[in-house]
Amino acid sequence: MSDKLHWDDALADLNLTQDGPINIGYLCTDRNVERGLGDKTALIHQGHGGALGKFSFIDLKELSGGWAAFLEDRGVGSLDRVCLFLDRVPELYIGFLGILKLGAVVQPLFSAFGDESLISRMEDSGAVAIITQRKHLGKVRKVRDRLPELTMVVVIDQTDAHKPLRDGEVAFDMETGRNADFIPAATGAESPSVLHYTSGTTGKPKGALHVHESVLAQYLTTRDVLDLKPEDVYWCTADPGWVTGTSYGIIGPWTLGATQFVLDAGFSSAAWYQAMSDHKVSVWYTAPTAIRMLMKDGAELVKEYDLSALRHMCSVGEPLNAEGVLWGREAFGLDFHDTFWQTETGAMMITNMPGMTVKPGSMGKPFPAVEAAVVDADTGIRIDEPNTVGMIAVKPPWPSMMRTYWNNSATYYGKFLNGWYICGDRASIDNDGYFWFSGRDDDVINTGGHLVGPFEIESALLEHEAVAESAAIGKPDPVNMEVVKAFVALKPGFEPDDDMELSIMNFIRKKLSPLAMPQEIEFMEKLPKTRSGKIVRRMLKAKERGEEIGDTSTLDDD
Ligand code: PRX
Image (cartoon, rainbow, N blue to C red; front, side):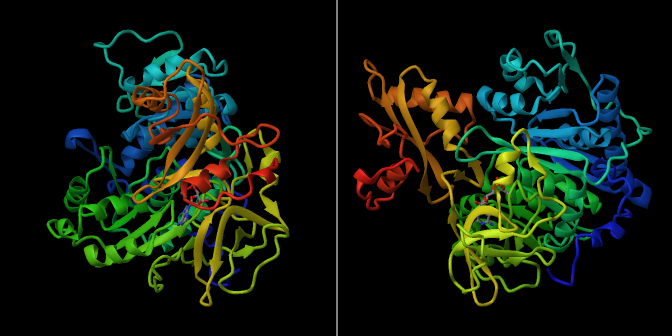
């Protein structure tokens, strides 16, 4: 561990003590008012059609206090799980803080999730409440019968003009619910805070449980890697349904008292540059897929906008290829600084710090408070030989490390080997200590920086009336890194034609999400299996990449 920086250095900055209370909701809101930032703009929100909303830190304090009081009055207690199922509306960001102020556990859900994705995550967490909007209420109604622990559905945009709400549904208008007097719960360092579900190779998504102390890591990495200064306007393009959108789209920046910009609109290069110019975005955290989408429209387009405020750019979620960095230099005159981390780690682990020489294609070096290495997959022994691929490993503990997988501590403990936390990714380290990503060590599909589990897709495929057998893999894609490709064997009597392909694609989009929808379906007579009948994705992947499939007679049950 570096002697330059310790996680506890954040304590003094945040006016916290080692054993005292620590509440992320309070640190992002009331504390900023107490230190004189009340009138500063905390959130600039741009919705569909360009509608603008501005919120000061006083607004954040009173509106999040309103959320906390509202939930408390209706019986939500500390440690209860409360879901957010919203587009990127202000209620998503402010409701998140209100739930934490109450001392309850916040469980963000991506608003494009379909019924099956909702059920697997809410059944497991036993959430008691979900906050949503009319647009998504139909999906919530569809799954309620299967979620006995879910007793309250809060709707943020119900008006008299709408049909009345049903039993167990309640309207809440954030603006009229303001509460300046709510006293944030005196949660401790180890009190649960955020529950983010993430996909693995097998089984249903797992809930990585974080605690309030995570803020120490989110604060320091935001300060030192994103390099936020008081005068910055910061834009994190990630949705809070994913960990980047909470650790660095809510918690880190607001503990620093920064002004955040949020854009709730579909992607277009021109709209992004226009927004960055209009709001004078100075620090930008985005993802390689977005960068590659911008690249497609060329560096010339960038020059049509006044982006003179932009001074720092970072990236996360998937390998940032050297081309992306080089294009960033050409288009913006700046380096994209890659950062590597995971839902489980809660904060950045391997980073390109400002001022560090960026080696295009490298993830950078361990953040100065982090001890990271590559280790042997079987023994967990550190590999000291430079440029040798091993498993990325981080030495526990650190404040933002997940404390367990919800209801699944066995899998959590299985992530440690020889005193290291094993990330599940492979990399090598060069002579200068820079990490170079080489690939995931499992079958999880990374599409546009979002992980989707092949098992979830395969299970959902089998629910389609025509599907007898299914397999899903990640197919390399020039923009999204990978897209989902499904292999399907149909039941007798069904035709493998274009209509069938569309029907299956739509089925998955609705059941899981647009991200999980296969972009391609290959129909096969039967799928390759092990002797015990397990479908072998490895062979399908090799076939897809044009690699040698190998001796199929050796198929075993691995
Ligand atoms: O495979 C790695 C990839 O994304 C995984 C973590 O995904 P998730 O938990 O959804 O969190 C994403 C945002 C923190 C990792 O195990 N990944 C993330 N960042 C990088 C990366 N792969 C290569 N380079 C990165 N910078």
